[in-house]
View (tube, rainbow, N blue to C red):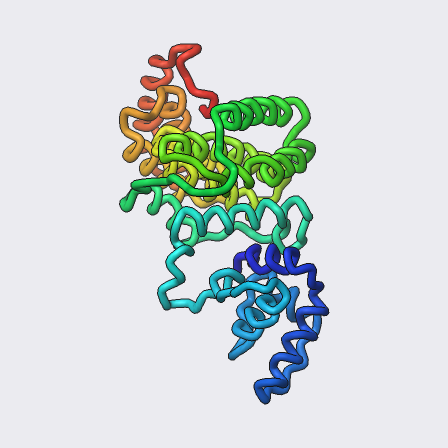
Length: 331
């Protein structure tokens, strides 16, 4: 189960406690002739990813809509009906932004169900990589928000990525994560919800993707692997929106490294192959060398010495083409 950060965020926005939500849901249920006896522990389970039964998701929407004085849908609270099409915004870039920023806020507030969530495996782990590699592409990422994003805003995000990467290298992930997540909430989130053209939006998503990748590295360094994986998946979606295949390949390299740590060796091989295949000429020699080297390690763990040796040779060939000063920051 993945933590329901959307529900967590909207409860925070509504200023309602776990016990308060449970009591209001019970009351709303009585108005429908239902006998409900939920307590705060039930809400905690919902936040961990458990889906409430029966009419309860609709009751939660009803309670929160009354509290916020606006419509609240099942998709808004992370409880869209499984197997049915979601509301139009849910699969869109704007829907992704809301889910991403909800995670940032939950991380900053140190919600236990977010910090302690395990990494997913199988299809949920593979789908973000598949979606990055395959169509559809984001044809237009422009947005009509109130605050117009400026070149100065983009420069600020890029400078922040450099700053937090250096902080991570000097102080480690545990110290850096709180600071970079605070920055994402305070600075990046309002910009993503702002107004921008398609061209500016692509630069914005690229700059934010670089920051989110660092947040994932910091979470990995803090041994919060489920959280790290979610940040990497977010960075991959941002890379797709930016149109920068090289950034996407870099993020996949982070996922390959995590897969090796988790002993998901076949997944590591497949992810590395996807990055090398999809990035094509956009991949740099240093990144290609890293991917081939990690692929070799995965093959070795699988007992395939021939493939491991082949990847080592490719890693060496790529390393010979590295030119200092010509590699991007994310390598």
